[in-house]
Image 1 (cartoon, rainbow, N blue to C red):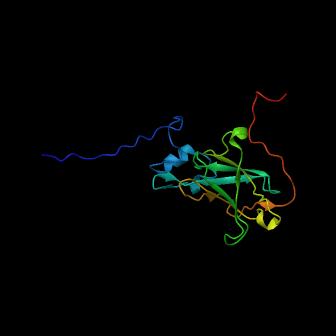
Image 2: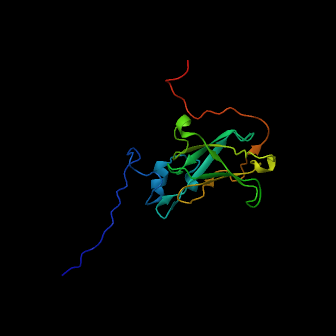
Image 3: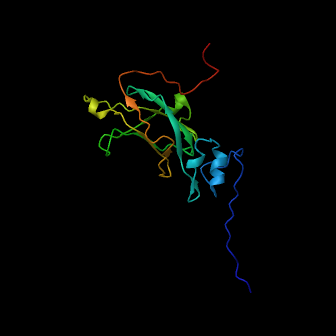
Length: 173
């Protein structure tokens, strides 16, 4: 008599399938298929069936606290993780970005784009605000994104930049 075998079958569907989790993978080819950016191809990896999150770039690259920054890349997932504005060595001057109002903006954390506000802490001291430094993205799965340009920094200054989080054809002229 043959003992029953337990099998686990994972149906990896196409990226056109809305039910497919684009951060899941079996091989690196699955990651490349869901993020065909040629600049990011050398950084692609499938680790423990999860595509490595990757940052292509962010912009604007400078602005005052309160500025909205768009981080572009892939494999961020569709649930909000954490974007941190790193002020320098160590974590003492790191500040978590501020999520935008979903009612006003719609989803601001998608698999390929994150829109986040540069933190301004409501205190009397500017020391509590974001400082010039890199940007760190960590997904809800706890994976830190790899940057295409690991030397890219966000420069905090006093220039207030305009921000757009959503275009809705039902409003405006």
